[in-house]
Amino acid sequence: MGSQKPSVLGRESRMATWRNWAGNQIAHPQSIESPRNVTELAAVVADASSRGQKVKAVGSGHSFTSAAATDGRMIRLDHLSGISHVDRAKNQVTVGAGTRLSDLNPLLHAEGLALANLGDIAYQTVAGAISTSTHGTGKALTGLAGQVVAMTLVNGHGEIVECSESSNADILDVGRVSVGALGVISEYTLQAVPSFRLRALEQPMRLDDVLESAHELAAAHDHFEFFWIPHTKWALTKRNNRTDDELQPLPKVKGWIEKTFMENYAFGALCRVGRARPSLIPRLATALPSSGSREYVDQSFKIFASPRIVRFYEMEHALPVEAVAPALREIRAMVERKGYLLNFPVEVRFTKGDDVALSTAYGRESAYIAVHVYKGMECEPFFRDVEDILRGYDARPHWGKVHYREAEELSALYPRWNDFIALRNRLDPLRTFSNAYTDTVFGK
Image (tube, rainbow, N blue to C red; front, side, top):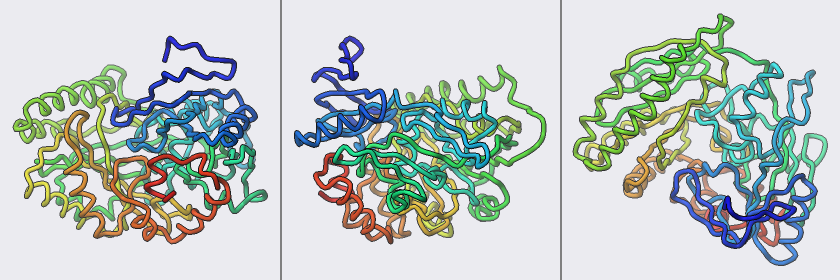
């Protein structure tokens, strides 16, 4: 695409090819367009709708599903980025939907603000993360969609719709997680908090001990998560707590060795060996829990997110928090019984329930079990077996990660499903924003 000449509106040629971060989704849109403001965005959508063309907005491509794929007109929101307004009295910030979290976090910090909770990857755009119910961890905290207090979208008619508590409140209420099916979001207003520091404690524990005390550990810490290392009895735990202590970041060289080299380059090398010689994976896995404990203090956003260079495929489900231990035990038993060879940890996180209609945490405190497979290795049989287990716990799949659910099954998992479908019919009756993925998960 770099050799193609964009038009005034940033339209690339019909030869465009798009791939997601993991490389498991490929699309050939008829054009890739980069509107410079919401007016140009609305014009693109209105023109496409009048011609019967499909439109999909794409962020950083970090979804593992085909949620953003299209053979119609693909929209990049790179020009709709940055902070446009700060309400210091309310600690609220208005940001462009195309802003990458990795860019937003230092911008917020410069304003003395931060987001209360974040995921462990910051490559996504704000719109992509919110629209797929990205969550982070913290038993007393919601995911990103729960921090939205207003948003602007362009609906299927090409109309600009402002949504807040005082204007189109019903759209804001139902549409904060939309999976791109309601329109193209151009802007959000987010509830921020004063910037804060976290004390991070990372240490290995026996998995059985973690599962016995998972609820107590999650309740005792502001942000708690753990990673079970398959083929071992060990889990790596992360406890992050707010602190007023002075900054004590990892030393620059030590931090690079431990966070970038060991967790990315060295781990990637182990994954490549395991892909070439799967029989070695159980032995290679024993290297992961041996890194010992570490403790440090840094700005919250620097601790929440870490570099992720090694590419993978991921499935994640949210389930009632009380089900996490039996569900993980069942997954562990299945892995042993079927002989799966897994070179990636299984991640477990926690959040507070929320009132966002299609949030994976709607109406219940939730735990999240995420499984990963190294890029280039077969993932579907393992993922399907995990999903079959989690079905028994009323688990909801992450909208942006691999799953095999369809509309009929999904509709039973969300009490406000019909509210969302009714809003979709109202905002996009011609299905301008539909694609194969939305047809599967919401129906046509």
